[in-house]
Image 1 (cartoon, helix red, strand yellow):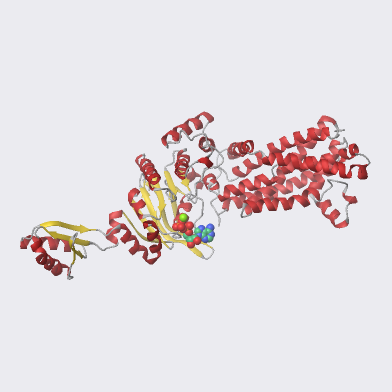
Image 2 (tube, rainbow over the protein chains, first blue to last red):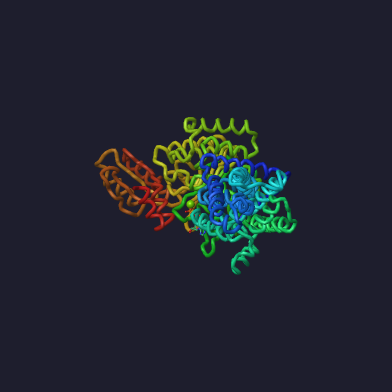
Length: 265
Length: 320
Ligand SMILES: Nc1ncnc2c1ncn2[C@@H]1O[C@H](COP(=O)(O)OP(=O)(O)O)[C@@H](O)[C@H]1O
Ligand SMILES: [Mg+2]
């Protein structure tokens, strides 16, 4: 079940990047025609924000304004990972089911390019989602204590984390048989990853079993890091853990996905 | 070797326990159209995917456009186009964007990619539909676009897996014309098909496989000869000579010919020697012939004979 590996010659990394960008454009072109995933990537976190804000705001933090300061950074991380979470895996899976992937694989381009292209398109979707979420967050009373640099840093970190998390979706998209299954898988993964975290409150307020999970959940670290950054109290610890987790996710999922993609039947 | 469009030798490919291809060899010269013919499950797709570097063989040598496909698959990919059994275009993009995208992936500049796309759209009669999403295309248009997308990079070798599957006869003829044009431009073509008629219409040479094994190969006429079953058809100019002629045929072939209204006498012969022998005897006896033919069996007869019972269902399907 192995396939010939692409011989690398000349400035291949550059060519791979160029080809990835062409394929990212393809993916984004689809987003303009069918903006569902981006809308979903904004609307879902925004709804969660409104819901939690008015459910827990007063009882947990005393006021919705204060709770917004706690809640928004987590919502940002959710938005930066969600806009592509379902769509990328599904799109790659669809490509594999019809003949498009065969076409790409019979072209003299790196087999990484179609996957990287899809993830790069995600990054742009995340960027759009993050900008809109900042606007919504501000409307709901969030204020970045750390100022513009902190906001940029948090957005950058959330998007970087989203980029690495995307590779997990890509891996699922390549491995799973049908597009419906990919959607189901991604949704099932969404709940524990995004909600089983420090999103609504510090993990030490959670019941034991959930806390155990939330403490190792990489999403928790990303949310903590963004929260600290945005509130003007950056912590090297949570940022470091987020970067580490990002690196781990990328370093495992990306090669596995590329390998599986290369030899997919 | 340089004049070979592609060649495979002793190709073996297994999927778990199934041996999809079991020692197949085939080759085509540059500019030749080779038809790979076989019933469903024969191993055609596997062969063509190995040639297109989409599958690695378990054994055997594969060269495409003079390049070893196992050592330098990227080199092969620069010189080929592959169209899968299901069209390999992006349904959500327009015809033009599909072509431009492939041009860009083949490192053409933006302008150049657009120009080439325009050229191909015209050549394949897709000007009007160029800016519509492919999902609105008919089956025939999709196939044409698929072929056009393959030609963006001016490939030397084109692999088409069952290109006419699902096309109605008119659209199929159109596709056939385009495949012939390719060959005229010097492109080597391998096309797989379940239909003898298609292989016969398009291919300079046909290779028949079944159950992963090579059954026969050659130019269509050779194939028919290989399968044997020649007949001689004889109708004397004077109906009164019928019995005498029948006696001649019986003497030479050792078998009494059957008599039919339309053709006169029909008898199987072992080879062309018997045919000439009959001709000589008729001459000697001064029997004038109205019609005298040495007939190859029809391709359907050949196919049936070569692939045995497995093809029966398929031939019926084609006839339907
Ligand atoms: N990916 C695969 N996994 C398992 N078996 C396969 C696979 N591809 C093909 N086969 C088997 O190999 C044989 C040849 O298949 P294929 O090359 O698709 O034939 P054809 O194209 O002539 O219909 C069939 O028995 C088929 O079931
Ligand atoms: Mg097939």
